[in-house]
Image 1 (tube, one colour):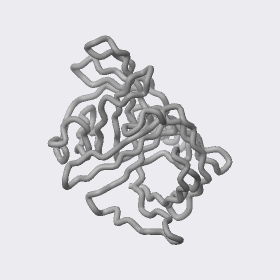
Image 2 (cartoon, one colour; image 1 turned 45 degrees about the vertical axis):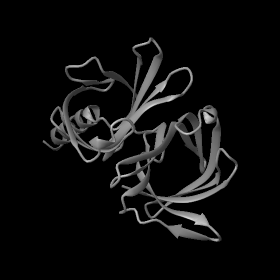
Image 3 (cartoon, one colour; image 1 turned 180 degrees about the horizontal axis):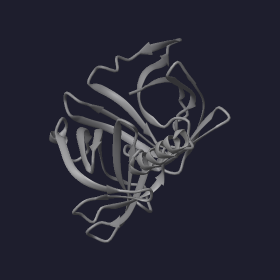
Length: 234
């Protein structure tokens, strides 16, 4: 009886993991003028982000995201930022999805995403808010409950950061790409950057550590400026 129960729990766990959208997903498609595009969706346990970029140049076409929950096949997202339609901020968007280990499909559309990863192997899978930045010899604390936010969402291999304001519904900037966490080094390969496309292709490396639920990383920005930040998970 005990072995049967363990087997059932194992099967149930595998089923739940197979049905989870947590991780990163990708879709290759074309614009109306034939430009090849790449859409990347990243899901943490609580939040998600979507970016559409030109596949060959890294030019950002669109980005949106917010919190999410899944009940059966029905997904509900509460929009926190949208580059094209800021009036959508705060709205709930409800739609059905079909999902398995390999694909995530928006029901009734041609939007079908292939899985990139399931939240591993990176150590920083999750949604994070910048809570402090080292300046003038000390850490300046940010109130993460305020409407102005800098959020970073990471799967096991993909990341996106977004700066935005909930109250004004203003989108400020975003960037993203792939990352690794190896031997205390957090490395980013920038695949898109809304403010400066010339940064596409740059690799940045930081020292990082996780302590008491806080992520601290130190290094230099793509402009060569020193960075020392603390992030907390949402």
